[in-house]
Length: 330
Ligand SMILES: [Zn+2]
Image (cartoon, rainbow, N blue to C red; front, side, top):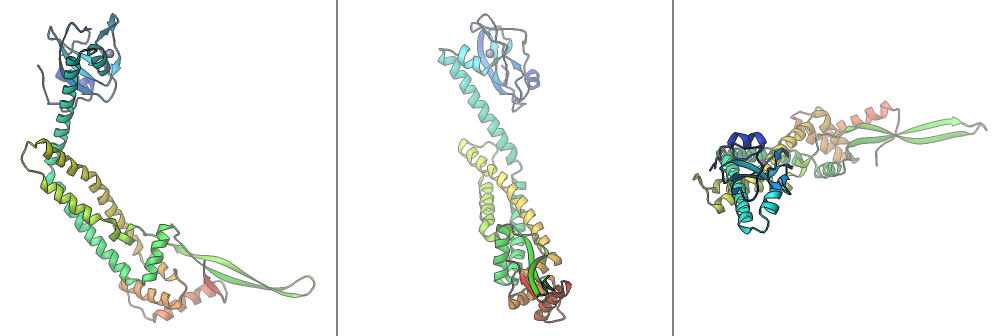
């Protein structure tokens, strides 16, 4: 009897043919059947069912079935449906054999998957460690940025990110004076928008503390380290190993997220972008405080006072549109 596990999962008809001497032309009846050899789940429905029902070969192409052995030792294929519902009809012993074999096969596949992954356990632990230190670094940088900026600016950035309202614009007023057709002088005041730009680099890093990344990484590492290093795990150990390894999908998500947030934070710290934060509020004092924070973050010194710096922005804005009145867009 062939019990080869050289191929852990039988996925194609070619896999079946490489392990068994299949008598593909043969058609068999229940009387010829002796025992099941191995179940399979193929990727495509490409196995032809050799069971004979209603006097002829079933011939249904199927994905899920069994290699079985006949009394004359030839090896043939039967689809899952024929195996359980025709060959196994009213025969608990035959049905039971098929079901037990399928359960064992599933368990073997599962064990193999876990054991393969476990051989990389050390490198998985290293990945968790690396993600953890990347998280610490990102958290350090993010909190340095947020604690430098006035608290109000941090809140506004958060709101802007959440509502995806990234454009920063102010309005300027244009006064039109003239004389109407009756010779009467008139004055019209209109506000027009001016965009200072679009904020970039906002993201989860603005509230990294709320993400529980660190706790999750810590749990992952604990679970990985708790798996016994012996080669053959018992069922309970296999289950906890499987749970630990299932965490690795989440690890990949966290790794990607940390990378993405680091990139976003770098984008946010681009000097031109950082400068936009000065225009997030209208209060002169708050803007002056922001100017100070921005220069601190950029490691640049200011050659005028923050207040003068803000006044210079406003003056340039007013001169550009020859206007006396500007206001933050509501
Ligand atoms: Zn069939």
